[in-house]
Length: 299
Ligand SMILES: CC(C)(COP(=O)(O)OP(=O)(O)OC[C@H]1O[C@@H](n2cnc3c(N)ncnc32)[C@H](O)[C@@H]1OP(=O)(O)O)[C@@H](O)C(=O)NCCC(=O)NCCS
Image 1 (tube, helix red, strand yellow):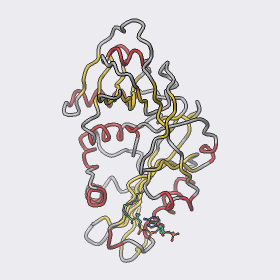
Image 2 (cartoon, protein in one colour):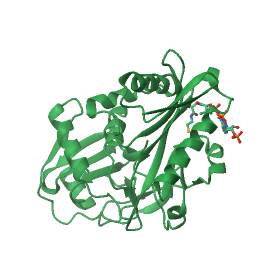
Image 3 (cartoon, protein in one colour):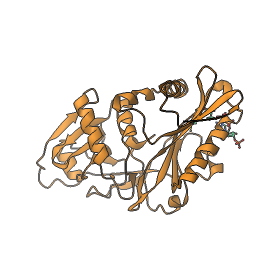
Image 4 (tube, protein in one colour):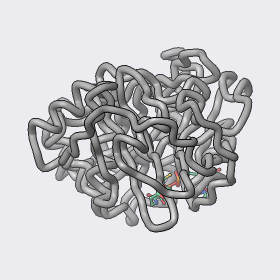
């Protein structure tokens, strides 16, 4: 943990998650700013151990401003890319417009340059703020189409999983540790914390363990379509097997990641959102073809 010179009477701290009071102060900042409780991660094993937070604190320990980097290895076009994700960017209203966030962005991006990351990645509703630092919007496309033809009914069992169940959480965490990337084109290679938190925040997401594949499938469905959000597994089941084992029979399937491992090809369809995916670095220029970051990898 490092402390540095004051700014506006605030104390700068880096790498402070070892201090429970400082972690709680960040949880409060994010709750007050975004209305989300990232403290729920304590149920799932705590914050991402690769996180490198940069923050300013007042004399009472209140976190006035924060911006965090974390290690987010990505599989891009068949190559493992050493990428850094950026998240938890917020400044309390009374401290805005004084350059605190600029200072924290400079520190975080500078630290990542020193660490030799090949790619930076973030999600934002304020893309103009990151463009001066070389970030560019990466348009996202999901993949839609009719389901694969049903040849034979796949044998296999799906167990519904619940985040209310400690045994299920342990199983999901174990599988997340051992997962293979869901796509070779564009996918997280390792990341557990956001998968669990994203599931927890959206009660419409269903989770099932496909025993035969040692894989956890995250999905939604409504009258119109079956939506495949992510798969964490030692192997990636074909879409036909997933639909058969989950007993899902829709005319339309939407896959929220490049489907190169699913034995099925959907048609890319522009994914509109107020939140832009942005990337920075040489590895970003090598991206080819339509991509989407799985909603369960959002951060
Ligand atoms: C966005 C936010 C972090 C900015 O914090 P801040 O301390 O007021 O920002 P700074 O004063 O350090 O300004 C940094 C730069 O961002 C720019 N900026 C600030 N707010 C901006 C906005 N809403 N949209 C675009 N650019 C913005 C500033 O003009 C400044 O540019 P400059 O370096 O060229 O002068 C703060 O308003 C906030 O917490 N908002 C709510 C949460 C949020 O949106 N977080 C960002 C999530 S991606």
